[in-house]
Image (cartoon, rainbow, N blue to C red; front, side, top):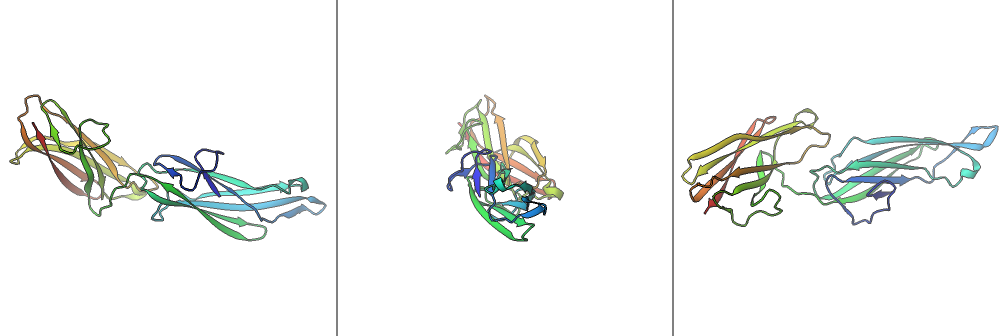
Length: 258
């Protein structure tokens, strides 16, 4: 058993780390199977019959996708004595996959000898880790100077005319059938005295369904500060709504204009 970065590519080292959204290719060669004579009058022609299934699970043992299944049935001649059956399966690491050791498990059954074997292989994934929650909440909140900044601001200080950017990860939302979810989020700005100065209740919505449940939703908000905005301390209120779980949550973060 081996895993590859692309189809029929070189075998990857055991410490190779896949990234979320990347496609992994898995190949398995089978030895020790039995064959049977197809026609007694032609004992130089034999048949091999193998069935297999393959499961890919995350560090918690949850299936990433439906179990892959296949069958290998071949007619072999004497000159095929060194023939080794092989199957290849590809799968996508979910875009929101957690870090850790993932497990590929292949089960093979020889229909002629009735023998069965299971083999496993681990692959490592380096993902974006977000702590889970039983209730709706925003994790990893950070103010940004620009939309594509990799790191948040050490001090959330802006100037009149700037664009305020914020990113966060939404967790704790509930699922319906087929892992369907619908999450909305908006924002409000309050003065340091608690007076609401601006409100956008629905800035964005994320909805969908998938075989492997989405672990978190990345959120992003932006707000252009008026060139004449008064200097002082303000509060950004992030309003989260989970439509499936009927949850409402507000997250409050202070920032300063100077």
